[in-house]
Structure formats: structure tokens, C-alpha cells
Amino acid sequence: MRTVIFILQKEFRQIFRDKTMLPIIFIVPIVQLLILSYTATFEIKNTRLVVVDQDHSQGSRELVFHFESSSFFKIVARQQNYEQAAEWLKNGDADQLIVIGTDFGKAIETNQPTKVLLVTDAINGSAASLMSAYAQQVIQGFNKNILAKRVPFKTNKGNLTAEPLFWFNPKLDYITYMVPGILVLLVTIIGFFLSGMNIVKEKELGTIEQINVTPIKKWQFITGKLLPFWLIALFELVFGLGIAKVVFNIPFLGSFPLLLGVAAVYLLVVLAMGLLVSTITDTMQQSMFISWFFLVIFILMSGLFTPIESMPDWAQWFNKINPIAYFITINRMIMLKGSGFSDFAGLFYALAGYAALMLVLAVNRYKKVV
Amino acid sequence: MKPVIEVENLVKKFGDFVANDSLSFSVFPGEIFGFLGANGAGKTTAIKILCGLSAPTSGKASVAGFDVYRQSEQIKKNIGYMSQKFSLYEDLTINENFQFYGGIYGLSRKVIRERTAALLSRLQFLDAKNEVLRNIPQGWKQKLAFSVAVMHQPKVVFLDEPTGGVDPITRRQFWELIYEQANQGTTIFVTTHYMDEAEYCGRVSIMVDGRIEALDTPEQLKKQFAVSSMNDVFVKLARAPK
Image (cartoon, rainbow over the protein chains, first blue to last red):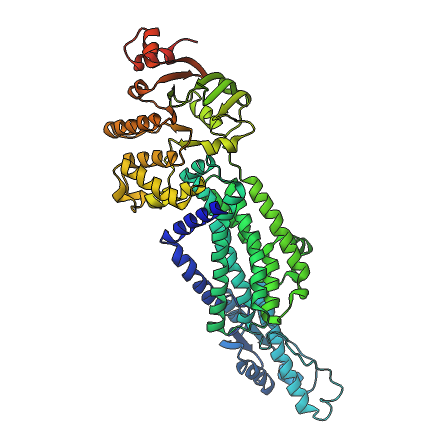
């Protein structure tokens, strides 16, 4: 144990003597939380709409007015024919076109079914389906309005409407959803990289050779190497939660000690993985690339940006070995739902098993020979 | 006197390549043993085996009474090591380096303080103990690395080209340190490419292509090869037809 304390003392001295470390520890979380939370959103506002009204009837003007008054749409141009309007879409100056044909007003007046053409720039598929859905909502609103005017007594009867209630995030606030996930990213990136660079740095400098001729024990060395980053990453989590509370006023319904406990176990997985990378590589550059390779895959598949449920089966299976997916799920449950331990016990045990496995691998892979 | 290093028919192969071909020698307590050879002759491989960093392919070897196959961790407690690659921490101060290595070898904080002070005043470098190592000239760093390597008072110190890239004056001072340490009973096992340094050794072995081709005192070797300097002995051996 005394040996571990000497290693810890040395590691902390080196970490805090490094002039880039303090900014990494304090600035990075602030920047990540502030920027990512505001920008990583799927909400579509201000869809740029081009209107082609070939009808100029009262009905068509009313429909256009519905779009005008929606906060989701901004009419950027009115064109006379489809070809001109299509140019706007091609040039990227508009996101959506609506074309109202010549017999639209007449059909409305005579209660005949009719159609409008809706063209959406679908380069970003999920944004396109959202824009299309918003446009259809506006059109439906218009429909209801017409019906109410034409047949005022029948409309409210026998009409099925759903009354939506949104739990855990009633205002559908994207920041509320993102921040717990971004907090996970924060501690993961810090933990993975710092531990991934650490032993390989000693290899590159040649100091590992000196360590290997000492009677130091493997577990002492690994503990001394992991503990500082474990503490720093836990500190990061608390620091990030503080920012989330102060800046975004993110709800924290669950138990704080419970979250710290889960994070403590989760970080063992991340740090041991980093350490494993560190033991199989010879230079910091190799370690960087391998760490990035795994982190990018883990992050993109973690369910931070896109729901895991809508991924293909193989991806959902892959996420069983993706530690980030576990912790994002648990973190959202604790922070936003106020879940207790029994709600995610299965996930937690899986994470704990994972941590044990990774530590065994990392300790075994580190050899005091050359 | 019982030898502190005993090697018998030691072989190390990497695939088909024989790095150490049946080495046999003994080193006695307090001796300064020069381990010479051209680049690639297999010196570093042998040192790594003796330090417990690498297992031999066959043969016997023991250091400080411990077997290299089974007791490499006990060996590590009883040896000091300084490699050709400088391996103290450049971002720590002199004092912090001593503290760290002393701690790893299980010395108490009090003992670490005392020995650090003693070793640094021997170097007349006590005033610089809070300097970060990065800012210290190369020659001084080597002397410091040597002091760290003997801090836990090992039975044997392995020095792998300790004076590489060091000016002649500092090399002399370095050898004075080595003598002083040997006089205290520490065995010195040193490799070098400087033949003037070979003259300072008690006995010298010369490796050629993985084998020990000569082993004796510098005087005897010069007599044996009928030359006037260790440099000529080395050139004769290294160039000799196989």
C-alpha cells in the first residue's frame, strides 16, 4: 500500500505539473456542455418554405396563411411555377416547396377532395421527415378549420383525438435530454484518453524500463496509474453536473450518491480499456488512433444522438458491449426519471462484470518484461 | 568468495537468431566487471536476462543468490539498473525522483531523506535538489541516475552504457563515483564502448557475435593479445576471422 501512495504522489505531481492538464480538466467540460447541449438538437425551426400558389383563391390564401402563422415555417419566396420554385431547393436556398394547383379553391368550396404537392429537401433524412410531418400538421389544422366552417355542428362529434402527455421531459426540451448524455461523454473521453496515454508515455520516454527492474508489483503499478484518473473523472462528473444545474437548470430527480456509485464502476471499465490500449501500443500516436477508433464507434452507437431502439438488430446487439450505452441509459434514468437502483440493477451488474473483465485483461496484458 | 553473479551455459534465442550463445562467467562482490562488445554483440540481451526483464532460453544464471527463472522479483530487490536511455522523470524535480524510486524500493520517508541528502552532497549537488530534471545538463543527469540506481543499496548495479554522450571530464567524475561505490562493496556490472573506460575495470569480458571470446583483467588481455591498449585488444577480437 505504501508503494501505491508513492506512485500516486508521483502521478499527481506529473499530472498537475503539465501545463495543458488544468485547461483540459476545467475548460473542456464547460465548452462541451455549453456548446454541444445547444447545438446537438433535432428540433427543426424556421423551415425555409417556397410557396407556388397557382390558384390565388380564398382557399389557397388561407392555407398559405396557416403556414405563415406557424413558428416552424418561414416563407422565403412566392413563385408562379414549379420550375422556378425548384431552383430554390436545388440551390439550397429553401428546404421545402408547397405547390397549390389551379383547381384548389374550387374543390374546397364544393367539398371535393383535392391535393397539394409538398417537396422536401431530404439530404438529411430525419430532418426531412420532421419537416414533412410539421407541414402535414399545418395542412391538417387547415382541414379542421374548413370543416368547422362548412359543417359546424358535426365536427366535434365522433372525432377521435389523442391527448398527448409527455412524461419526464414535459416540454420536450432537447437540452434536458442531451445534458445527461453529454456528461457521460465528458467523463468517458477524459478517462479513456488520459489512461490510454499514460503507460505508453512511459514506454516512449523509456522510464517504463526503469520501473520494470524495480520490485514493484503489477497491481500496485496499475492501481497507482488508474486511481488518479478515476478521481479526476469523478470530479469532472460532479463539476459537469454543477454546470448542468447552474446553467441549464437540468432536473435531477434521482439520488446523487447512486449516480456517483454507478459512475465509479463505469469509470473502471473505461479506464481499464484505456489502460489495455496503453499496454498493447508502443507510441502515444498509436494509442491515440486506437482510442479514437473505439471512442467514435462507441459514441455514435451509444444512443446519445439517435435512439438505440431504432437501430438495426446487430447494432442493438453491439451495444451490449458498448459501455457508453449502459451509462447514458442509466444516467438519463437517474437524472430525469428519478429511477432507483432496482430499476436498472440488471444494467448495473452487467457493467460491474464488464469492469472486472477489463481490469483482469489490462493487468494481465501489462508485463514487467521486455 | 562466493560469486554474486553466476552464469553457466546461458543461451537466449529469438527465433533462429542466437543472441547469447552459451555464456559462462562469474562476478564477485565489490568487483567492477566490464562487459564489452560491438553493437549487436548481445550485451543488452544478457543484461536484461540478469535483471529479470527477460527469460533465458536455456542454461543457468543467478544474481545475488536468486535464480533468474523463478526469482526474478527477488533479484529486482537486490539490484540497481541504469540504462543507456536516460530514465528518470524529466518533469519531476531531483528530490521527487529520489523520493519516488526510494518509495518503490520500500524505503521509509526518513531513510529516503537521509540518503537523498547523502547522495546529493557526494555529487555536491544538494543545492539543486528542487530543480526540475529537464533543466539539468546531460552529464549531471547521468550522475543523478546512477545515484538513484544505488539509493536502495543494491548488491549489484547494472550500468548499460552509462557514459554515452557525456564529455570526458564528466566521464572521469562518473568513474570516480563507480569506484567509490565499488569500494563500499557494491558489485558493478558495466557495458561501455569507450576503451579507456575498459582499462578502469577489474576484469573485462569481450563478446563477439553472442559469445564471450575473452575474459580477464585488462593487463592479462593486453599480454595475451600482445598489444598495448584495450582498444587494440577489442579491434583484434572483433575483426578476428570466425
